[in-house]
Image 1 (tube, one colour):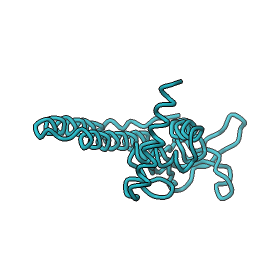
Image 2 (cartoon, one colour):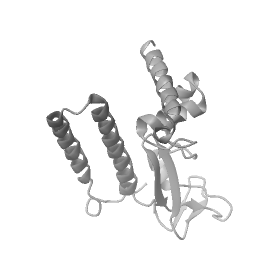
Image 3 (spheres, one colour):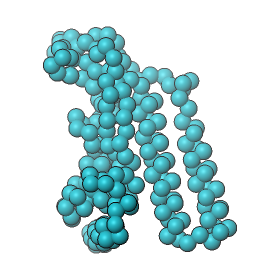
Amino acid sequence: MIIPDTSSSINPNFLFGLFDRLASEVNRAVQECMPIRDFEQHVQQSVAQIGASAISLYLEMLGDGDVGEKIQTETGEVLHRSEEPRQRSIRTIFGEHRFEQYVYGVDLGRKIDLYPVDVMIQMPANTYSPWFREVMHYLSTKMSYQESSDVISLLYLQKSATGHPGKGNKWDRLSCLRNLSVLWYSWLAR
């Protein structure tokens, strides 16, 4: 598989700016003697933004999966490239990410046989990244799917299946925090 040379078109150095901004916020928090709760929440938001930006940059730098107009499989089948890249959406612990990639198939109107970018990053056919699935699986063994989704939303500042717990009522947030603390202590006790 050909990985495109993106050194001239995409510059990952903007991530350093996000780290620099976080370092400046640490200094500001110290000067203002910011309460730890507010500072911790701010750091969490910054880390979530850095993670989401890094994942988006990673997907952009991989390119669009164009490996030629036709490719031949090991079994001798000829797969044809789609005329236009297709939109793909994946969910990671840092949120939902969209990118475009060319796809390949014998008859693209019926079935797509190859998603080159998915193959490069070892992404399963569904929309959830392997790490996201692993975290959800661990959480869901300790609590319901909805509670797990709410905990991830709280930790990674994403929308859950029913909305964002940070914007819910006080009791929803307290319930989510209670579940998180139970999970944390059970993990420490392993």
